[in-house]
Amino acid sequence: MTDRIKMPERPPKERAKDFKEVNTGYTKEQARDEAKRCIQCKKPLCVGGCPVEINIPGFIKAIADGDMDKAAGILKDKNDLPAVCGRVCPQEEQCELKCILGKKGKPVAIGNLERFTADWAQKNQTEAGSSKKEGKTNGIKVAVVGSGPAGLTAAGDLAKMGYDVSIFESLHEPGGVLRYGIPEFRLPAAILDHELGNLAKLGVKTCLNCLVGRTKSISDIFKEGFKAAFIGTGAGLPSFLNVPGENLNHIYSANEFLVRVNLMRGFEFPEYDTPVWIGKKVVVVGGGNTAMDAARTSLRLGAEEVTLVYRRSRQELPARAEEAHHAEEEGIKFMFLTNPVRFGGDDKGFVTEMECVKMELGEPDDSGRRRPQVIPGSNFIIPVNMAIIAIGLGPNPVLPSLTKGLERDKWGHLIIDKSYMTTLPGVFAGGDIVGGETVIQAMGMGKRAARSIDEYLKKNA
Image 1 (cartoon, rainbow, N blue to C red):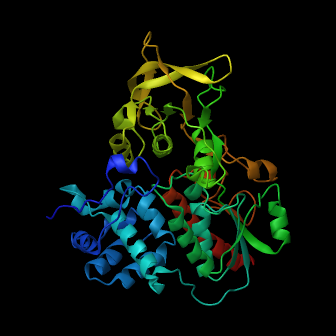
Image 2 (cartoon, rainbow, N blue to C red; image 1 turned 135 degrees about the vertical axis):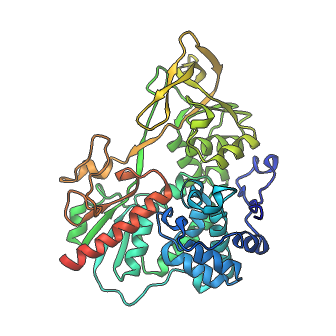
Image 3 (tube, helix red, strand yellow; image 1 turned 90 degrees about the vertical axis):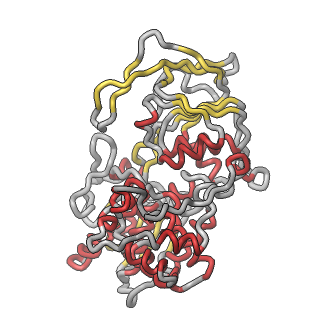
């Protein structure tokens, strides 16, 4: 069995100083060699591990055969955002986890091959790399609220089915979490813009600066002639520690911090007029991909020392292993089994210190991970002059709170049935607003919801 081809990377000391991509991508030769590792199973389990149902053996075989047009076409048949997924999808927990080669060695690098194929299609401007609409538009209007991964996927699939699709986005640029939540060094805006351009070729329209719920209501949308709507407004409500001193200046939610840097192009100041103050000693609280993104972004913007504080051990770290590895390579310090209990500040209201306690792991909680417990008397203080809280986001409450009849569960997620329809007839939902956790899960929900919308409209339009 040949070894898995490692994705080339830029040196840590070089990449930690800029926002260019960390991974540089396969060469054509590397991609073909990696593709030839696939044994083309008769019953490919990898496909079952893909939320968007890509014919994985098919596109990989096309790469191995040198037929890149075919490979790109197979990818685009199921996924309108392959260049995005190839960069940010946790393949190691999904398709690659199911790969037979992983039983005794390393699985095929499906994500790296997806990225290579999508990038090749973009560079060569091949028709196979662009989304294609089948048949004519049927004239039936469908609204998509939110332009994150769930909304974009639903919009693309509905457009391919022939529907007249319009996306309503509250911000001044489309993309949702793909644009404002993921740093440029992991997902360049130019890559996202290209994928969005492919959706536009399908006829998908985008209405920006339109906050549905405020600018217009769901009722207004139906009055405008739309026969169904999909809600993919995501997660926009930051979670906090609720400890003393958390309201001090220079303590941010990761959501606020990354939006200012990514969506407002703060990393290109003064070319873009969005200055972002960065402390010399920065602490990031959390252990997920967002925490890694916030920590690595702080480092690139000039922090001298960045420490990531996580209340569990390394084994429970929810971030992708690759992202944690890259962070450590770049100089991010990790402080495991540690939890903040208080922030202290100066007489002007700026944070200067964080008091923490050491933790130990007890019995597993509802998530299956061992529950962290405080070690009595283990309190200690570390000096900080900027803190970023990255412990999760709740579902965006704006639209549900302003829409009568749109019911939520106790966590604030929209209630949906098996067809992804909400408690309002003709209104469907998917992604973080209903409890999705990753980009690819949101995309899978958008794809399945699109099929349900098609079935609904064939009966009701």
